[in-house]
Length: 354
Image (cartoon, rainbow, N blue to C red; front, side):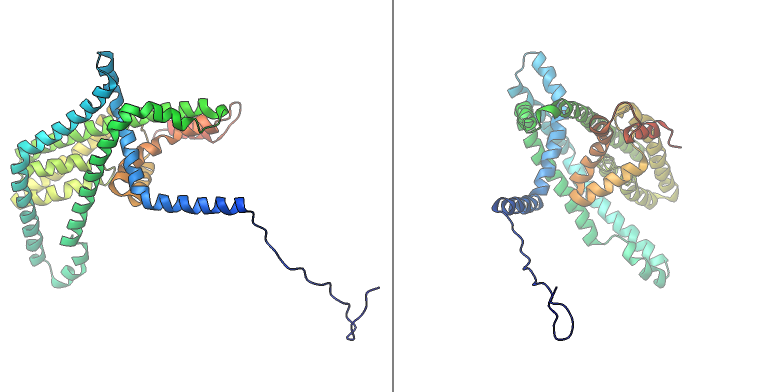
């Protein structure tokens, strides 16, 4: 029988001290996880550039293989392909550099004059309320810095692309060695599907961007819109950006068209709308095929996530990564003989969008 205290209550058992034993190995794992997170935070921009270089290497590898079949070794074919791209860009800038500089100045002056003329015609209250919506010089400088960072990252990615074209196969085999032997067949299948999606996306996007720049220049020059070449280059660059690229390229073109006449501004707006419809429903399906048939919601979500995390480079590589998901789901999560999410997702994807 328990002894009773003077108050008549039984004695409580003594409390045990709470102790947590953490082994040295667990401490090292936690420290390694923190170190990896810190390294990722410091190097994520360079990792994005490396991913972009992987995309370019996959897209250019068929051209290198074509040169190999004709007797040119890979150690010469890879740098030759990248050098041809750089020379083509440098040649274009050299031929049109003076015109681009002059049109760029005209572009800025006309945009500023249009903004001032609009500001003088609206009531002061509305002008103050909408002042935050008008792009300021700081925001335009920020947009320019965003584009310059993207172009600089693209230049670094071209250098890394050369090394991947030369030694990419051995690097891939070295990485696959970390995958358990039982899962390596699925890893190889995933890599093959990813390569097909990436190659389709990169080649298709570059082709559609070139078409957009050429047709925009022809249309704007025919309507005598100022700075037609600059606007065409903007159209080609923003064509790489899903969904909102149309608005980013059309807005300044419409403004400069209105500076000529209301009829020209309306014609410019109609051209951008009609060309966007033709590109979305005829050109892109023919170029991309079935590799990147994604819903508009997926495209917008991928672009927003990629742009938020990685800026212009993140926005560019987000869409093909989203396009890989269907193959990843089929390879790693498909269970034959029963209904699973992969089957349901394929059934939903086969349905018409509208």
